[in-house]
Structure formats: C-alpha cells, structure tokens
Image (cartoon, rainbow, N blue to C red):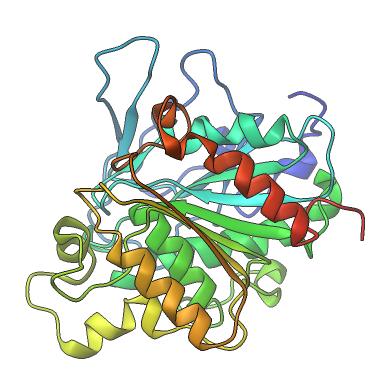
Amino acid sequence: MNGLDRRSLMLGGGLLAGTGVRGLAQPPALDVGAVKPDAMINLWPGDPPGTPTLLPQEAVQDRSRDPAAPDRALLHIARPRLALFRAHRPNGAAMLVMPGGGYNYVVIDKEGYEIGPWLAARGVSVFVLFYRLPQEGWGAGADVALSDAQRAMRLIRHRAPTLAIDSRRVGAMGFSAGGHVCADLATRFATATYHSVDAADALSARPAIAAPIYPVVSMHRPEAHEGSRRNLIGESPTAAMERRHSPHENVGSDSPPCFLVHAEDDSAVPIANSLLLRAAWRAEGLAVESHFFAEGGHGFGLKRASGKPAAIWPELFLHWMAAQRMTGNG
C-alpha cells in the first residue's frame, strides 16, 4: 500500500474491500490500467444516510475509443468513496476532487485519475470523490452529493495527521457537475444535510479554497445545463429549489477563495455559469481568480486541453495555490 498502514486507512466504514453496504455486491474495480490509487476509502460506516430500499447496482461504463485515452464512468453509485493519490513529497496540502457527469454518473479518468497523480507528483495529496447521485432514491434527495462532499472534507481533516496533511490546507476542486458540487460545498458547507455519525462530523466542511472548473452553477434557464438540472431538481422545480441549488445565490462572507476556469466555446455548460459565480464572489468582496479561454470546449480536464489555450490552467492553479499559502509550511 505504498507505505500507508492499514489502520490509518480505516476511515469511516474502513477499507473498501473490507466492508459491505446492504444488498451491494462487490463493487466494480476502479483501478484497471496504469493508474492506480494508493487506497480506496469508504465515506460512511455501514449504510450511507438515507439508503433506499432498492439499492443502486454499480457499473463501470467505458466511453473511450482510444486505449491511450481512457474515459470511464461510474454509474449508480451505492458506496460513496474516496480514491486517494498520496503526495510523493507531501507539502501538507490536499485537494478533494469531484469529477463531473451531469449528475448521471461520475467520470473516473479525465477529471479524476488524471488530475490525482498530477497533483500528487507536485506535493499535493488528492482524494477523488465518487459521490451519490440525486435521482436514485437517497433520503437527502438533491442534497445527497453535497452530503458526501461535506463528509469527505470532514473525514480528510479527521485523518489528516496520519496522511501528512495539514487540516487547515484542504481545498476542493470540481469539474462540470462536479464543479457544481464544489461550488455548493464552498457556499453551503455549514448546511445540515445529514445527522452526525462519528467524531469526524464535529469538524468543519469548509474547504480552504475552491476551484470549480467549467462548472455547472445556475439552475435557472437559460444558463442551466439541462441534464444536470433535471437530474438534480427534477423537471418542474419550484423557484425556491432553483435558488437553493444555484451556488451563485448562496455565496456568503465566509465562502473560501475561488479559482475559476472556463472556455468561451463551451457548448455544453455556458460560460455564463462561471461569470455568475465570479460576480457573486466579487459582490461579497471575496478573493476570486478567473481564467477564461477562447478555445477548449467542455470536459477538457488535463490531457484533453493539450494544444489548446486552456492547457495552461493546471500550472495557473498551482501558482494560485501558492499565492493562497496552500503549498507552504505556514
């Protein structure tokens, strides 16, 4: 386990292979290929909160036609968990990473298993979150992914000393619908979405920084990404539901510094989403850095930005992290 002792990884429900969720068969392997996390960590001890009677049956969908560019998606998530990529030479910082998928699935590779090793090689420990999906019968409904993000932040902080992490320097990053989870966490981190299950839940879920990358933000038309909106709040949501789940309408004075990336030619999630979030952060007088590129499209992650102006975004993010004193010793 690359130097990780077994006890230190028994977070919440323990080592993934060692515990079960009611009615769930052995979950599909997510470490096929060259990229393998250092560990898989369950979020919850036993059943996740609000477990439905009919438990979703997990499956992996391979969406790539190029063996050199894997693009898998995890569907019907029943066992929310973290894939840990431990920093090679830890600088104390950690990032909770939430891939996208339109709240229909969670992608594994391009917005998770690519950024994880990349940041780990630069001293930042990464926890890729496979969060539950709101339309699959969980008790928290539209708040279920936020519940998992809150729990993940608290769990990382709870075990930070065993993983060479400074609990004050745990940030959040998300892509597309995962960017919505990230922005939701940055604005509603203190919202009670589940009952405490152990000592970890006494800790703050506020990320030290937030980096929503080409994020879904608004649940209002015309800016909304229709698939994410439908999966999150249904076909005919109330105005109150739209506001509750539009992070730009929930920014507070205690929201963390924010780093935004979006491409002007994004035809899936309009750049207006990032602009709304930027304006809301600025209206509160909060620190926000924005990088908008002429070309990049949607879902470029790390490797798919190669050769495009957007390819520089990860380096820009590292410089910004340093400016936020995330990667130092202070």
